[in-house]
Length: 446
Image (tube, rainbow, N blue to C red; front, side, top):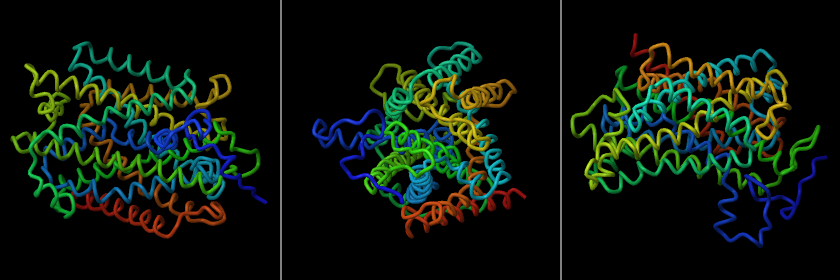
């Protein structure tokens, strides 16, 4: 019979060692709840997201702004389902798929994740290097190698507690776009209408970017990362028990949902701000195509207009955001891929483990990151690669959402903590919506 710990026995803290409640104020208790959901939400606005949202605003103005509002409940529902699976079962999604649906389905899931994540890894590393060149015009190859080395060292040789704290702080890089929206005069009536009234154009260019926006907002790597980080949190808090379900209670579910909602809300607000900024600053001034990182950086020039050399300062702000979010997103991409592989072949997998205890897990992280690095040396344009990556994510996510929906709603797997009716509804709406966008894009192409 499953035992449930009392509220006093369950540490509230989701990253790091528990602190006595009496020593934390209300803000401290709230911040202690934040963890996998916040990090996942911040990683959602990775360099691929910045490029895709910027291109959307530049090319179509405010026409696709409604997606940021429309996808908030969808993103929240699918990520909550993923986090719930990890929290309740104490296992990642691939491990549950393997147990429930067999090795063949599990290996198919792993293949989809590996392909999408490796391409995304390469595009993000390339975008970080291109952004860094705006500040220090060193060789592109030197920057890619430097960023790859830094990311691997942090991911492999630092503790999970320290690494999770670093990822939280890197999320602050998103604020530059929020500030820009506030200080630039905006046509608020037009923006309000575009936010809440959907606009659709049945042509390939429009549906291609819609699929990209959805794909970088609801991405496969987010599914696996948040589920596995819930397991990591349980490991840190000593809630995992051999051969039994994690020792969780209602408070854990509540904290997970708060953390997840804050992360997804932050992600979608930033998505909205990037599209608005690009539409107001670029599209309104005739810039409808973003070909380089310098083009994307122009969207932030109003943020630094009081400086003598606003263009260069804008490049610094843009580069800092891309690099910060790249340092956040690339480990999430390689980590989620490695969790998937390790679960499929029953390797030990945890960022809390030392290298000698999880050779295979860290080996996949290293190989995936290096393969991503190599993509930058086959002549692919970094900005174009980012947008194409977002579209690939949008297509790959569809079959994965189908499996997640089935698992999260299954009482035999989830017990009393299976997803509720509203959550299940939004997850299935996400599946239908993303599938329709992918089919529509292909149909208009032919």
